[in-house]
Every structure is written in structure tokens, then in C-alpha cells.
View 1 (cartoon, rainbow, N blue to C red):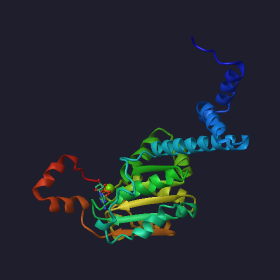
View 2 (view 1 turned 90 degrees about the vertical axis):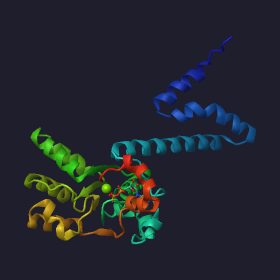
View 3 (view 1 turned 180 degrees about the vertical axis):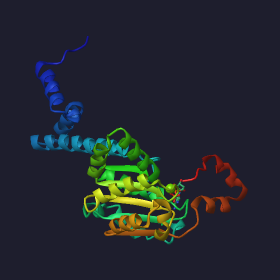
View 4 (view 1 turned 120 degrees about the vertical axis):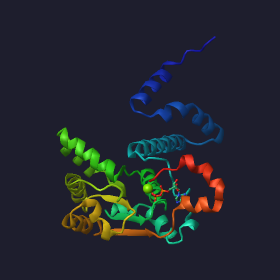
Length: 265
Ligand code: ADP
Ligand code: MG
């Protein structure tokens, strides 16, 4: 025989739903039984439930922020082998993962050859920010310029710019592979200008600063862009060879098995 829930229980269920406390709803009976067994008082019971609800909220928030960040793949700093990149100061990266630089509206620039872990590190730092409650948006430089150009043709540019200006951390990956049109460079410059001292950016490039003009076209615009970007910046050059190439050399012919996964990035 099924037992029907008592009126207070039904009401409690309704109220907890209305108050958006799903963990209270799911766990209250179990926690009450635990508290009874532990002879814990009412405030302790309430505290335990609140803690569980908060943990779940933080977990869901992080999950949502990671999804909204649009990372191309899930990479973490834990999965980064710092011994493979001695030119990179691990302590500095670990410190940056605390995200205080984002509170200070500073920027990070990773410079290095293809395959040296720039994208991995950017995602790792972006993930760390998501875990600390900071909203992040990841773009490749070409993807960002395309999105801006598309919005421009649909007269939605101002809205997109406003949305991007609000994101505390904007990641622009792979500046350097694709040269931009004059309009593309100007759109990118505008985003950087709008964020200047208002939000943080991570930019990665395979090109040293002297060569950024070859991507952005105009020397004056490149100068102005670098001026803003590097005003408060942590520049992290990675001087090693490609991690993938190194692996392949070590693995020798066996590295061929990895070929399918290879992609220029
Ligand atoms: P880049 O953006 O500099 O071209 P990626 O970050 O895309 O390089 O790295 C290429 C691949 O090698 C990725 O799968 C990345 O996870 C991996 N990788 C690069 N460096 C490291 C490292 N030091 N430890 C672990 N994985 C690495
Ligand atoms: Mg990359």
C-alpha cells in the first residue's frame, strides 16, 4: 500500500520548490535523520542543509559558466605538464589561477610557437576563473572577428559589443594565423578599446609583437592596440618547441598513431 504524504510535507515540497531550494527538498529527510542520530540541534540541521544547497549551487554555477565560455576543449592546469615547458614560470601560472589579476583588470599574453600549450593554458586559466564565479568567453581571433563582422551586417554589432564588454574575462586565441581585413582589424581594436581597464583578456599569439602588423595590417592601429593591451599585462613567452612534436620525436614512429588527432592550432 502506498502511503500518501501528509499535508505539511506536501506544502513543504511546494514552498521549497517556490524558494528554489532543490537540495533542501531532496535532502531534508535524510539530514533530519542524521541530525536526530547525532543529537544535533535545529540550527545545526539548518546549517547542514544550507551548506549542501550552497555546494550544489556553486557546482551548477561553475558548470553553467564553463558551458557559456565556449571552450573548444576541456583543458585544466592540472593536466598541464610544466616540466615540458621550463621557460614558463609554474609559480606565476599557479598564482594567476587565483584570478586576482582579473579583479585588477589586467591582461595576459601567451607568446610561443604552435603546439607549445598556449591554448591549453588559456583554457586552464579560463576554467579556474569559471570555478571562482567569474564569467568567461573564449574566441579564436578569427572567430571573434567573424562574429563581429556578421553582427555588423545584421546591425546587431552594438548589442554584441555590449555583451562582450560585460564579460570579465575575454580570451582571444590564435592571433597571428589569419591576417584580417581592414574592417576586421578595426572591429577587433574596438573590442580591445572598449575593454581597456574595464575587463581582462588573455591573448595568445605565435608571433612576436613586432610582427603583429602583418596580421592587423596597419602599423598605427597595431601600435594603439598593443598600447592598450600591454598597459597592465603579464607576458608569458613559451620558448620550447611544440609539445606534440617533442612527443612525436620521443615516441618515434609510434607517434604516427597520434596523427589522427593532429590539427593545426
Ligand atoms: P598552442 O595553442 O600553443 O598551439 P595547444 O595548447 O593547442 O598549443 O597544445 C597542443 C596540444 O598539446 C594540446 O592537446 C595540449 O593539451 C597539449 N599540450 C601542449 N603543451 C602541453 C603541456 N606542457 N602539458 C600537457 N599537454 C600539453
Ligand atoms: Mg592554440
